[in-house]
Length: 195
Image (cartoon, rainbow, N blue to C red; front, side):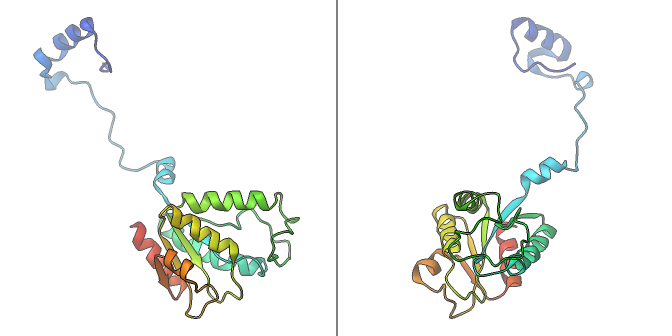
């Protein structure tokens, strides 16, 4: 017999008669509980998984340059049960170099407004913002915005950046919570934050 969630007067009388007096339950006549499940379902795993947004320059890079480190980080984080969000997901390799201005989005199914909407959404919903600025040749305005959005939400920002990087600026460095020198150190830091 299933226990009712709300008991009215007739239900209380029936409950007391069946299970004991004044709410003291007779253990022999307790309804059986469903078996305890020790292995979570796939949806429970997906729900519990942390997310990390992979920020970094895209303009001036070809597809391989924009995706190779992100693919490496995605695999490394996935092994730790962490979901990576890449701004390059869903973008096909069209054999082009991405432009600085962002005006040329003809290779995409959407324009600059849709790109910024998705990137802002990702940068503000992630658990950690992971930024790779290694060997950047020019300042990435999009990455600077993603750092600012994460900082506004007080999302931890882990940044891989060498000394003398073009992004060294008081506004950015103060918004970066953890600065490291290699991708491996950065990924280790991310996993330590989320453990």
